[in-house]
Length: 115
Image (cartoon, rainbow, N blue to C red):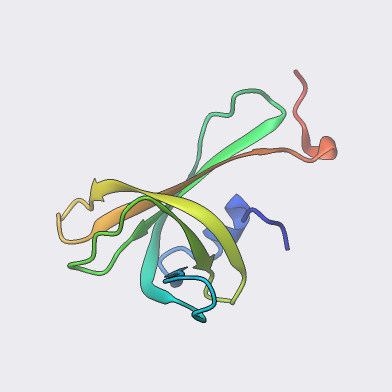
């Protein structure tokens, strides 16, 4: 599996629970974690045609408000990646806080759009 999840990896699991984990400290096992829900994905504007930009937005459980951090993100099917997630405010109802992962990755040579 790639070190970076693809937009398709996210789109396959919209509105499903994901695990967000962080280490308490070195050598202390799995560390802590929480279940979050993938609520939105979208394609962004890349800096050039050689890159692909996309985003995934997750809702945290009510009462949870995590900081920007590099987390371990585990999909519903068990694939796992390291990703930085950044708080972007509450959802439309104001009940749950959102975290965003933004990716700006180089396209494979065969998938590059003409310049």
